[in-house]
Amino acid sequence: MMTMQEMEPLALCIATQQMFDRRFRTAFCDNVLLRDRDLKLEPEILRMKREMNSGMTERKYLEGHKANIINNLDKIVALVGRYARADVHGAEAVVRNGKDMMRKVLAADTFEEISSMDAEFKTKITLAVYELFVRHSKMTQ
Image (cartoon, rainbow, N blue to C red; front, side):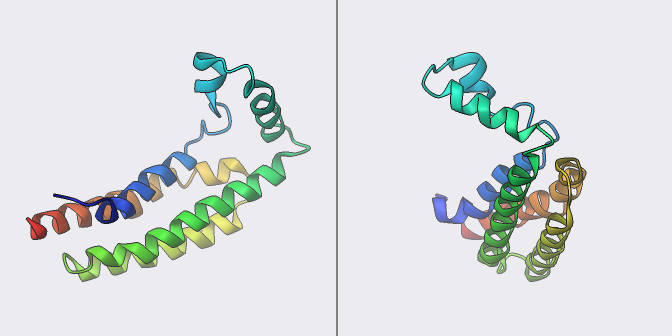
């Protein structure tokens, strides 16, 4: 049986991967806005969505977005060591690639630059962590 602690690095990868999606700003909170139609949340979320997509206020959202991605990458890098028994070199590669991605995200000036990193994040981080997770799972059974 897997514990939540063992799945945490993979879960962080999945959550972070969505932040690289080019549709992040356009699809922001669409469930509440289009399906759920929560009248108490809708005005504030619509305001945020407009600001996030406005040239005047986009920068503050971009910086917050970058901070969240970098924080998640930091956690992934810290937690991937849990899988090191399964493949030390694989875990080290995730750490190295995670730090490289952190530098790239820090240097990004637009949401588009961040979304251009989506494929790299999927292959170098998410899939690598998934492979380590599978190997670790097989070892613990």
